[in-house]
Length: 136
Image 1: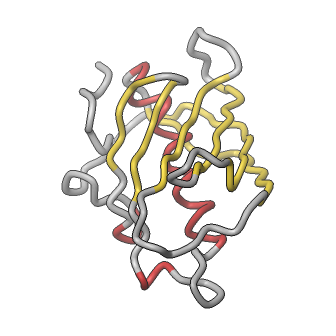
Image 2 (image 1 turned 180 degrees about the vertical axis):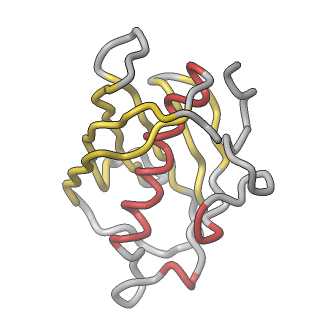
């Protein structure tokens, strides 16, 4: 059964997710959206979000496509990123979006995503193959 809007999709506390990112997921266009407010400990270069944190945010949001839309768990098989703009650590929230290429669920599927700055500018684009796994 798919998760309800605002669900983290895992066993951690709401919005906990990996490394305390505080991601809050919802099923909305274009597929799944996560809101994220970077904190100082997410810094890479001075004043900027660490690229690995941006990657983790996208990876988690892309995997949430399976859980929120289909009630299945997906794991990352491949992940390709394109960093388009630096992400400032200025206290403003970011929006991560993820969607699959095909509307129907599959055991193995291509998922796309992007991390948007608060003004809607695309900062990071992502594409990957995600594979369904059984939850034990």
